Length: 228
Image (cartoon, rainbow, N blue to C red):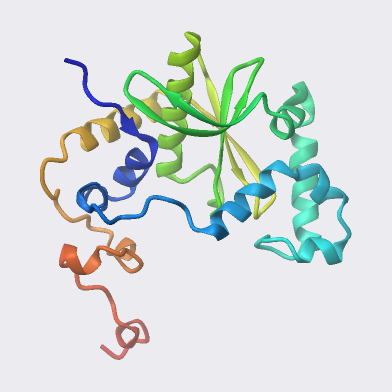
């Protein structure tokens, strides 16, 4: 009997913290829908040309994360960098949006499906790292690429991560290391039959909604200020 397909979100969360993934999967009341502010930021990724042409005052009203002038400079630099081979045009005019992709092992929503060549683009509402992409997003990107490859019965060698609130787009090559990390995350989710060990990086616990249930002691404001 075939195994159930794992969701992209579970793979992403398990990469960040397996224990958090366990609590999410076993909490019947957990809301997986993104908040409205996330959707408003993701919507920026459908309006790049409009944002580039917008006057500074109008741009300041958008849910961007940096000053309007800096944002425009970043977005222009991204456009110029991706102009070759029609990459910018493909990101602005994808073949499909918000597609439910079902692969051999996982499934989830691909925000943009690009063709010629076939590539997924995922839109993050958060801040990018200084270089590359965050590891949970790397695993998510590989999962999306593999799901599309399975559906279209072709190879997919690259994915894209968009950070529209910052005007930044990054390429994610499907390297051997990234594929191996995806397989580890897949195995982790499938083996979650009980709470896994707590992670050592407790900074991740500060904003976790399951911290109390998990039993970790997060730092109080007093300790953060050096008084305890």
